[in-house]
Image (tube, rainbow, N blue to C red; front, side, top):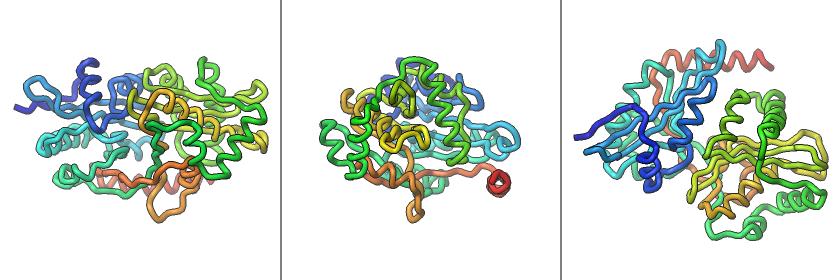
Amino acid sequence: MLQFQNKKIAKNDWDKFLQTNPYASPLQSFDFLEFINKTKNYEAISFSCSESNQLKAICLVTIVKESGLKGFFSRRAIIYGGPLLSDHTEINTQLLKYVVKELKNKVIYIEIRNFFDYSNQISTFTKTNWDFVPYLNVQLVLKDATSEQILSGMNSTRRRQIKQSLKEGASYCEASTEEEIKQLYEILKDLYNTRVKLPLPDLDYFINLFNSPVGKVFIVKHNNLLVGGAFCMYYENQSIYSLYYCGLRDYDKRVYPTHLALLGAIEFGINNKLKSIDFMGAGKPGEEYGVRVYKQGFGGELVEHGRFLKITKPFLFNLGKFALNQLKRFKK
């Protein structure tokens, strides 16, 4: 008999299940749940299905609520990477129904941001009335590759800029102190305030990530100054994911900190025999998106795994879209 619950799963059982699931990522791990639940404005809930005390499927949901008025209109549940589904459609269907039932009064919508190809599970989502949203991603295969091969696969401009940065004495490495995290966060915050104009988690999110087993932070230095870096997550024997990356603006025309930060993540993946690096999002098909062009410069493949969307409160969802657009216009 199938049993569904939203209680915390034992770490050993979760880790063992994750190691054999084709949809494994650090964002569906026990350690990610622990990291999220230490962070302000975030909550992680694990949903699972078991039979005869054997795990069959897991879905780790992150609930995000921003502060103030914006938070009222943006209460959302994100399933990063995609659920850890089983081979049985009925199990998966029942698990997703259970997730929606438990969350429908807590959030305005639920979104699954796929990092994998779920096309063979499409009936699971159609049976439970999820809407497919086309969305692109850039993934770079690292398996059995050398640093030289990855560098040669980048576009000529990216390759030249990386070599030039290294020639000028810039270097990259893993962050080792919380003070470095604070310095890097200030660079990232300035970028989001002045150019990106999207919500950014508080500093504690990044400190907790740095201290999490799934977190990896790479920093770039030049003349003993921290000039950029990348916040990443990884899962052993699988992939590394670039969450946020940045560099000091107008620092030095001969140094490209963001290039080196992501090169640090790539080399970590190669040295640790990871399968790929996932650049996490490249916008919607048919729409111009400068970040997509930047990510493709590293030589990765453009894929369309898309997203699945379940709107639990249609009126508030539409009202929220309108309100957030007005707030964005007011901010300008």
